[in-house]
Image 1 (cartoon, rainbow, N blue to C red):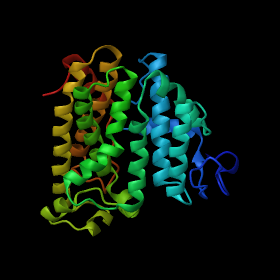
Image 2 (image 1 turned 120 degrees about the vertical axis):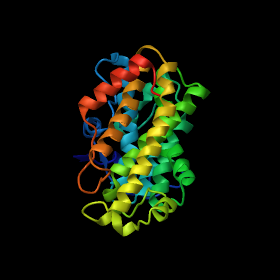
Image 3 (image 1 turned 60 degrees about the vertical axis):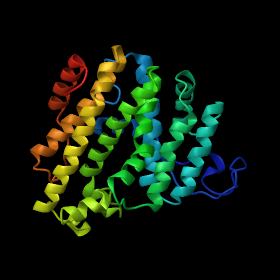
Image 4 (image 1 turned 45 degrees about the vertical axis):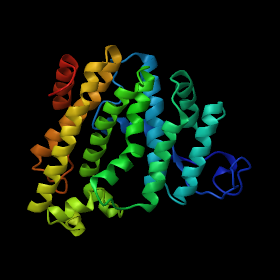
Amino acid sequence: MVLSLPGETLSGEDPEHPLGAERSGELPRSAAVLAQMRSENFPVASRVLPGGVRRHLHALYGYFRLVDYAGDEAPGNRDALLDFLEHDLERAYLGTARTTIMRELQPTVTECAIPMSTLAKLIEANRRDQHVKRYEDFDELMNYCALSANPVGESVLHVFGRAEEGLIALSDKVCSALQVLEHLQDLAEDHRSGRVYVPAEDLERYGCHESDLAAPRASTALRGLVRFEVARARRMLRDGSVLVGALSGTARLAVAGYVAGGLATVAAFEAAGHDPLAAQVNPSKARTFTEWVRLHARGGTR
């Protein structure tokens, strides 16, 4: 179910919008956004975490998914809708946000001291999605992940009061790896939307064509390419998992869950023969839990 933007913000002129730009689009209800947590590869806000921490993680997740919805699914002018969200993010930092999800974000950005520039990167990533549909090489893809994924981990570190330069760098590796794995899971769906997140140079190296992504099952060449990309993501996860050992308490518990979800997704790709076209590749809860316990106990993976 969707809820229209308040008042005049769906059409006509918004007097507070910098250019008085006309917008169109709809935003989902907060409950519908939060319900998507169950479909994530990792536990977003486990019930074993303290209530205050879970509230902040829920608020951040709501914001992240709202921005993704505006950039991926919203009808109408998505660029204009993203402009509106950026303006409402600015309002959130002033305590005057209009949309429900942004209002729920207000205490989190204040209490956790999350820089607005960090959260604004997600909006910029979704703006890029409207116009950039291909990535030439892995470096280009990582530059995109720096906007679309890495701010998520940095925001989580702010929730736990551990947003330190060295820890953010480790978090970036984990978040970029999780983003790569999600792109591989969604190969067919993204291709239908006109987007390809596998680097063009990798497609060429493995003798694959974009048309291969529309097949009912992956060719031998495409499975080899997916295997290569999954292995690269696994190395990034293992390198970044040092972050778990650098944390303690609830921060360690939460971050171990994120890394565990990634490793369980790697295992799911292996079990599916690295073919995300024939069936949806999803990590099992049992494998995620096993990895979570091991990571939390050992403080990382080798």
